[in-house]
Each structure stands twice: as C-alpha cells, then as structure tokens.
Amino acid sequence: MTVSHGRRVAILALVVALVAVPTASAAVTAQQSTQNEIDTCTTIDQAGEYTLTSDVGANASGEACLTIAAGDVTLDGNGHSVDNAGGADTGILVQRGQQNVAIGDVTVTGWTNGIDLVDAYGASVDGVTVSGNQRGITFGQTVEATVSDSTATGNDYGILVEESQVTLSSVDVTENANGIGGLYADIVLEQSTVSNNDGDGIVTDSSSLTVDRSAVENNGNNGISVSMPESTTIQYTIIAGNGNGVSAERGQVDARENWWGADSGPSGNVEDPATGRLADGSGDSVSEGSESGVSNVRFDPYYVTDPRTGDGQLVGDEPTTDEPTTEQPTSEPTTDEPTTTAPTTAAPTDDGSSGDGSGDGDAGAGDGDAGAGDGGDAGGSDGTESTEQSTIDQSPDSNEADATTSAATGGDTTDSTAGSESATTDDTATGEGGANTTSAPAAGPGAPANETGTTAAGENATRTAQVIGGEGNDTSDGSGPGFGVLAALVALGATALLARRD
Image (cartoon, rainbow, N blue to C red; front, side, top):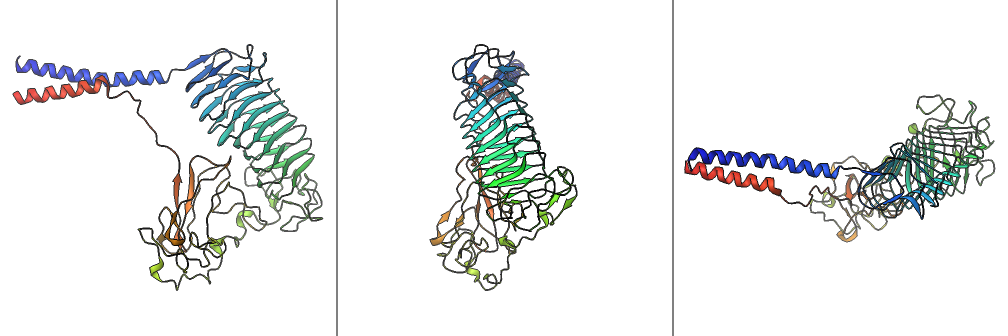
C-alpha cells in the first residue's frame, strides 16, 4: 500500500466517524420527541407527550376516562373535549405519586370530578375549561401545583383544594354553586376573577390564603370566608357586590389596601382592630370579631378606585409598605447586645468550631438578633431556628410580610443580613457544644422538594442559604459511546501510524 493510498483510507474513515456521531444523535432525539395520539379513553403509563385527536368519553368506564399513571407526562387536549357519555367518575385522573404532569387545552364536562390530581408533585393545568361537573378541578395532597389561564363554570365547586399547595393565576371561576374551596390548604390566587357564584366566592378552613390583584365580585353569600385561618392576606383586590365582603371566624384577616365597591369604604359598623377606623361606608362588609364593635378584618387603609394597577387613590392609614418596622428584630435597639465588648476570639472561624453556647459571642446565649428567648441567632438553648410551613404575619402592627418570612407558595427563601459587621458564617449553624446543625425542609403539603434552609451563627453575622434536596440533571441515555465515537478513534489511530511511516 502506498503512502498516498493509506492517507486516503485514513481520511475516509475520519469522515465516516464524523458523520456517524450526529446521525446517531439525531435518531435518538427524533425517537424521544415522538408524540402519541389518543382518540379514546385510555391509561397513560409511560412518560412522554400525548395529544387528543378527537373528543373522548363515549366508552368511559371504571374510575376515569383518561388515567395518567406515569410521571413526566404532557397531555395536550388540542382543543378537544373529555365528555361524560359513559359510566366513569372522573374525566382526567392523575394517579397518586406522579410528578411533572402537564394538562392543557382541553374541555372537561359532566363528571363527578372533572380533573382530579392525587398526591402529585409539580403538576400544571393550563388553558383548561371545566364545566358541568360536581367538582371542576380537585387537588388532594398535592404540592407545587399550578392552574393558569383556565375557566371553571357551572360546577358545584369550581376548584377544590384539600391538603395541597396550589397557585391559581389568571383563572375565571364564575357561575358555580361555590367558587373556590380550601381545607388544610395553601392557596395563592393572583390576577384572577371569582364572580357570580351562588354561594361563597372563596371559602377556606384551617388554611393559608393569599389573594392578590384579583376581583371577588357579585357572589351570593360571602365574597371571602375563612375559618381558623393559618394566615389570610388580601391585597390590591376588588371586593364588591357580594352578600358579605370578608368574613372571618376564629382568626384575623389582613385585608388592607383593597377596594370595597364604594368610595366610602367597607361597611359593618365595626372598627379596624389596629387603627380604630370605623367601617361605616357603603361598600361590602367586614365581620365582627370576638370583641364587640371591633372587626377581625384589618381594612384600613383602603382604595377608592380599582387597586389592581397599584396606583389608585388610598384613604386612611399610611400604606402598609411605609409602616414602621419596630417589631422586626433587625431594627430593634441593640444597646444590650455585646457587639462592642465581645472578645474577638468568640467569632466563628473557617473550621466551623465554636464555644459551648454559654458566652456572649456568636454562638452565645446573649440577647441575639433572632429575638427568640435569650438565645443567639443559632446558638444557645433558646435560639433554635425552625423551618415550618410558611404563614403570613397577621400582627396588626407588622408589615404585610416579614423580610425573613418565605412566601407561602414554596418559592425561594431569601436570607437577610443581620448587623453591620462583615463576619460570614458557614452553611451550617453552630449550636451548643460546637455541634453543627442544618435547617430541615418544611413538612406537610406546603413543603417543596427543594427548600432553602437558613443558617446563621451569632450576632452581626451575614446569614447564608443552603439548598436542601433536589437532584442533578442526568443527560446520559445509557447507550454508550456508539459506532461513531469508535470509528473516530480508529481513524485517528490510523492517521497517526501513517504519519509515523511517512
């Protein structure tokens, strides 16, 4: 074999290798992106993308017409309907324990449960209409679910949330027997409309509720009714034309900075529990608390125009964002703190060691910034920092939300900087006896899989965050290097040998 012939062979082998690699990759990609078409009631038991090609429901039987029994599933209704013309109870059922299920662009009518999600994580419902069902969309023991750009109308209950954490964005819940119900739930309603329901617009029991920049109007009974609320905050919202505006039982509601349907403010002839302003207007009413003549709903200040743009006219007390923050630990006087006399040896070192928690240093049991008993931020027996299901501060003299309180939706947690010194702690807090402790994720329906734990050590220390849980992205398809890579290695070896012979 001549040298020139050997070079030609080596070059040809290299070209084959370079072509084989992208070709094989394109084949795998094409296989993964293949969509599955559905034209009848069925069970989806493998991950992938599924599309309705026609209306379904005529042959429904058993538990549901469409059952999703796998995670990482996208069901695109493609504008079609899931209509109850058979004998099943549920239109679309997401079975227990599934993650990352997305349902969109479908109409579901005539079922006991239109769409039912049980013990799901990270599910989304988008562009859906549920009508004529006993319960339009139901969530049970489901975490980090979202409903967006959807409509619930003509149901006994538009949306029902039990022991679940759900965010409702740009939804229209109208002309149902009852609008939105929550039991042991964490519900966020934003930029949405709840109107013209026969009973209550929103009713919750033992739940956390946030309503932001929405309209709760013309509901037959209460616009918003809460019982034993964990926390309830209503802001920048229209509450008008309801039988009663906001009613609370065995708890207090923060409903400042809303429009009550009249320039004169809310009615009820009761006082704001913090400012003493009398609710003597002609707008929707606020309820009376346990003290005669005093409301259990904070309503002062209030808007006299539509507040959803955030630039309407406000009447009454100053906006909550401008209120003094005397109750926040970081703004309290620190004359009793040993910041100027504490020995420098008590500052935490890089190896994470500390004292026994009995001194006045960073891990000491002195008057710490956290304000929890006599303990420091993280050290001392009374300074234990815990992570719980997020709630919104209902204290009449506090802001809408403390700077160190995380959002009730399981979002990211932002730690604040305490003190003016520049000492920075490690990712773990140092407790008594020098033991390192790490914040644990919150439990219950409000607990996301990836929680941000807050850690701190001592006074004047910058607090840092530690991400707990979560998994990395595995991009391997398990198929090995393949023919293309092997051919490339052979070609490179041949080229090197021929070059050596030359």
